[in-house]
Amino acid sequence: MSRFDLEYDGLLWFAIAIPLIALWVAALWDLFRRQDLSARRKAAWTAVIIVTAYIGIAIYFALRPIPDPPGKSSTQTVPRASALVTQLEDLVRRNANGEMSEAEFTTAKRHLLGLDV
Image (tube, rainbow, N blue to C red; front, top):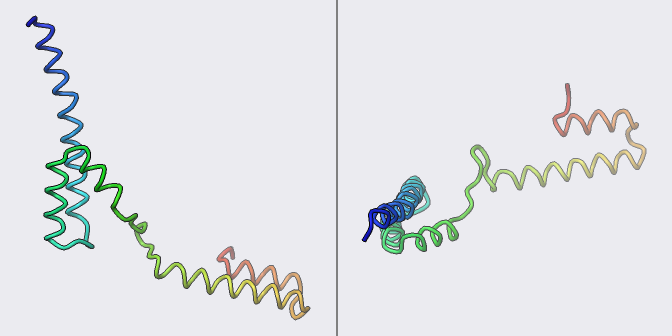
């Protein structure tokens, strides 16, 4: 075996090991920060991730639920959006019936949407 072959083997090992370790760290960091899993499920996922290497990491991230953005919750957003749509529909109906002028409609709509300056 030549010196080049030994260096190539070392580079190949390095090219496989470093990304795998980085992915393991990222997956395990994400796993242990999750609040929705019990300790038993976290232990099971840890075993799957470590034993099956790249496949386990891919499975973990593929099956992981998409988290809500910070400060947002789907349970809070949907009712608020629904109420906003209902209020806008009411404004449109009142404007179409002539209960409010175009200027009042625009002002009320901007206020409702938070566009007041």
